[in-house]
Length: 211
Length: 250
Figure (cartoon, one colour):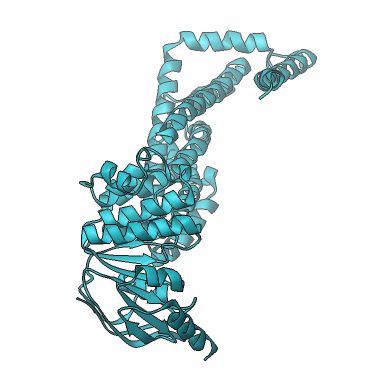
């Protein structure tokens, strides 16, 4: 279990979270849904210890991450980008499993946006860390690629047994991916269920936005 | 690239050098005095004479050795100081006035002082180091500031070991700028060394030979020594450029 206890995060005078609490079950995809500016990325950066905070986080000492931008090392090949985070990764078969066979020796600039995103996701799944944080991994992708990657994320998660915390502002992808949905707004949890319909989530976001 | 452009690119530098030689020849002819401006032929005769003397080779190698030492120490120091400034704001604030002072130091006065404090072999090395250090520091510091912070964050999250982060992620990013900084400093380094040697009267040096030629009014020899310094600088720059191209590709 990953536990966030009394997390408080401020940027100067602006408080993003105050005494925020969340328990995340292992071996599942927990999607944190929220509007832009609701603090989703800040929450992930806090769990990854990329930013200072008050409070306590347990169960997430080692994490891997899919960032909003792919953050692939431009002068390393696809293979070396993956080996950088796990020397013993079976890169060839992993790439085959997501339809990227033959790209081992390509550089990130030779890949399309969808391919680069897949490599970034694969790199995160290849990391030995048991917890995987995903910051809007499907943003700016074409619909067909998006759906294909959703399937791959679910399959890779099941095969790896990792705990995934994914943040998104997209209701549709949230419903498709989540084993649990947590909606945040104004620095608080406003909804927390195993599943929900798109309509419910849209209404929640709209109410929170208007309110 | 068109064929005509290729030919032009090849010819233009040759034309530019030839123009200098023609101007020199014309000026020497109009002055008509070996003691003011020797002809191209007289200078080349002096050059050949220099190549026959063992003293010249000793001086030439001595200057090259001191240049190499000054440049290497300066580069390592500049890297160390730039790295400290990059890593810590406090270090940068502490080092900033020192760098301003080094930049403002009057070279000639420092050579004279250093001769008193050290000796004529060490003084030119220190002066050359002091003059090229700020330039190297600025270039290396800018290169370090250009490191992609997002990639560093990625390495931190994934727990990439520091050794791997530096060799595989950081160094390849800064290598082109580091190499460019070295290239820019090399020729300047040689010129400064010869100038400092003239002032310091360093034994077995190009500077010493220049000074001796001046005393005996051997103007063709002086010009030949200048020519050798220029050509050596160009060769160093060219060889370094060849190596740099390969290194950056790697």
